[in-house]
Length: 151
Image (cartoon, rainbow, N blue to C red; front, side):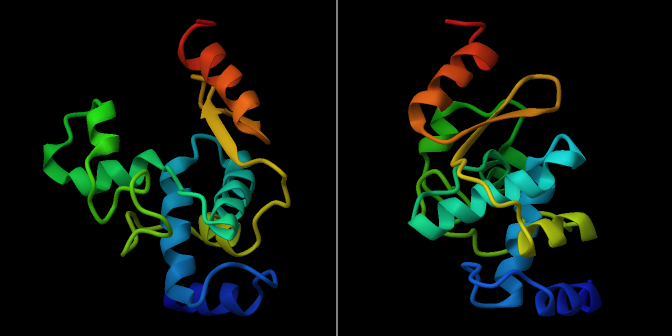
């Protein structure tokens, strides 16, 4: 992993919001856990980088789940998203303090060469893929469609 991290860090896109290779590794771990579809990995990376650039919270469920540890029973609840902790990217800005998983090389590359996108949001369609949105209005409509059955 150290060799891949060094190689990918040296080939990274300019102007990424990471100060160190370790921060890129943390982002890669989030991407690793966020993607249900390998083809969307770069887009997820692009959205998360966009959020970091503007100071928006990452709001990544896997970071919250990681922070819950053994207390997580497989059902992420709203109360979990509201409980502050070092891995809760709903309550804290920036990256979590450590990686949340061992990322693969593809996720490392997506963290260091993310897709260029205007999207700031994504929501699971329920089939492993995600719907990407540029603004909160589009996102809320997608959440309603894919997560609430159109309600």
